Image (cartoon, rainbow, N blue to C red; front, side, top):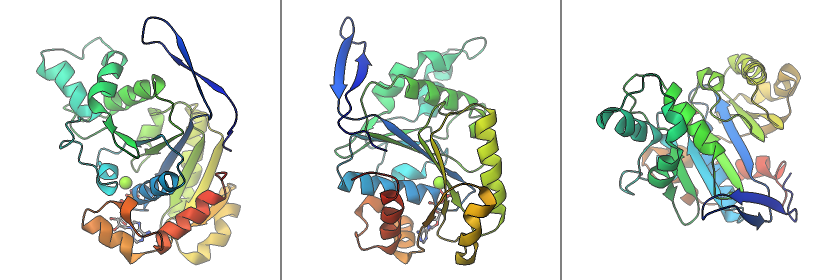
Length: 280
Ligand SMILES: Nc1ncnc2c1ncn2[C@@H]1O[C@H](COP(=O)(O)OP(=O)(O)O)[C@@H](O)[C@H]1O
Ligand SMILES: [Mg+2]
């Protein structure tokens, strides 16, 4: 629930001392998860469109998937914008400049660099990406750096949308320690029910705190399983993202889903889903 009207303190410790900024909303963090190809990234992009159109900004999009589809699906070319992914920044800071990762916790010292050189700042939303380039082939460090960066956020975003990769390892590494809402986007088979149960359990085991955990039918989720979505998972089911050729065409053409017509059935379904949980 958006607590509009509530005055929230946002401490900003730049500028010699503490400046207390007041804003009219609390920051909400939404995380999308699920198996590969269920439509998570498209869902995040369509959520961004919804929030932008309803002026629920400032908005931060976080691409925590090394495949980096979210930037593309929202029309952003980080490189062209002169911005770097977290993995690139880590690599530059600790490897190319002769640094070492031995015995240090590099993530603790890189947050400022991430906000300065990694944050894409757009008219309608900002974007941060974990990226692919990490020489050790493990995303532990980029994930840890992301988590720390999110912990030192200075701008008071109204919404932060995190697109996470398929699989559950990143949950064990806690890319965010506290989130408001988790969406598990279910795929075309009943295996998705198992995914939801495992994800729900891991999140609790590793101590990620959250307020709401919802299940959503992905665009290939069979209609006949909708009935079971809630009963089998024990979690609230918000509905299904409609299978929509326009989305597939936009993605294939590398076009931003934020520009998809409002009449797109997929966008309409995302709107209906979000109207159930976001005020106004
Ligand atoms: N609502 C939709 N209708 C039709 N096709 C979709 C829809 N959402 C996603 N797709 C297709 O599925 C592919 C995978 O979607 P994506 O959002 O990247 O999934 P994930 O992030 O879960 O891997 C996209 O390339 C697109 O072609
Ligand atoms: Mg994805």
